[in-house]
Figure 1: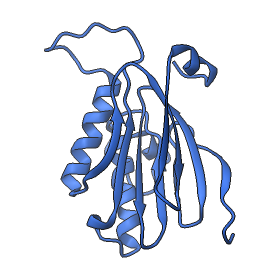
Figure 2 (figure 1 turned 180 degrees about the vertical axis):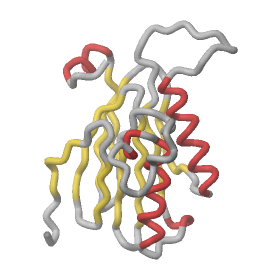
Figure 3 (figure 1 turned 30 degrees about the vertical axis):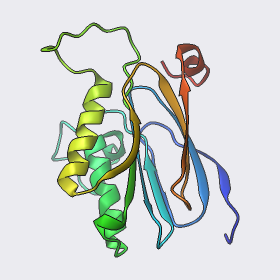
Figure 4 (figure 1 turned 45 degrees about the vertical axis):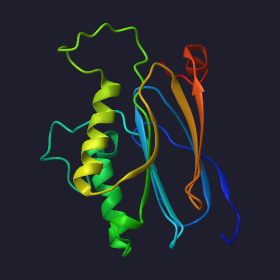
Length: 173
């Protein structure tokens, strides 16, 4: 592929993209979260778009589970395995976290259940911490959606916050 950068890749919920080739990936997040990982030495980048925090049926969450990338817990684990299988040390992975907005007007007491967005963020933070990975940048929570553009060959992420009207344009709410 040479120095050509693919720019036509749109990541949908439940998708993951890992590449050592230059690519620009875009996605739109509401309560979902995206984790990006990048290794400078090998110029490998990865991004995911997760809908839910954890898989309820752990017996199905094996390496070949077709639903695995819907879940924060399963996807981060898989991304880490991919990087380490290429000989990349955990300390050499740049990690960024985005999304997890509370897109709906839900009143939650301090003792009430967490929204899906908050659960996604907490799960990502927990798994990254348990793995020993540190987050170099993040933009999470709040009530606005986000459009992010990730460059696999540099690790750079561009972010635009989206209001409800803009989210509808992308088919998200």
